[in-house]
Length: 173
Image 1 (tube, rainbow, N blue to C red):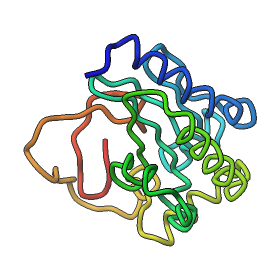
Image 2 (tube, one colour):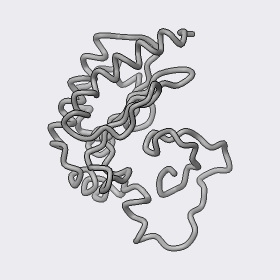
Image 3 (tube, rainbow, N blue to C red):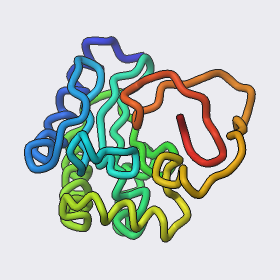
């Protein structure tokens, strides 16, 4: 298993990929273990406007890229090696620095940004088209109490800046 020092290098390198977009959009989280970029200013922010982030975990470093979640076509042409790093629809996990994969991920991030053009409304609309809108974006349409998907353990949520949350059928937190 890689050491926490190795993970620190991975986190810094992945943060370096995402940081230029934070200057173009809005940095929502910036700590030693989390870095997040949002397409909306804080007053208009909700999880549907989240662009991406990096999270330093115990077993790997995760890179989240939400344009891939709402536009899976962005993954066309992605190498099998990068696809093997995927967990879910928008998360890539790494345990060591891999410059070839990081270069590919940087290109994927650039294409995702170009597709979204930093426009918060784009992602909200695209998620709605796919039925993927987050609970906060769809809260007015929902009635009745939310029910957890499972009674399993709570988990850290990248959308909610790492707060421990319960997973619901309508989304996380």
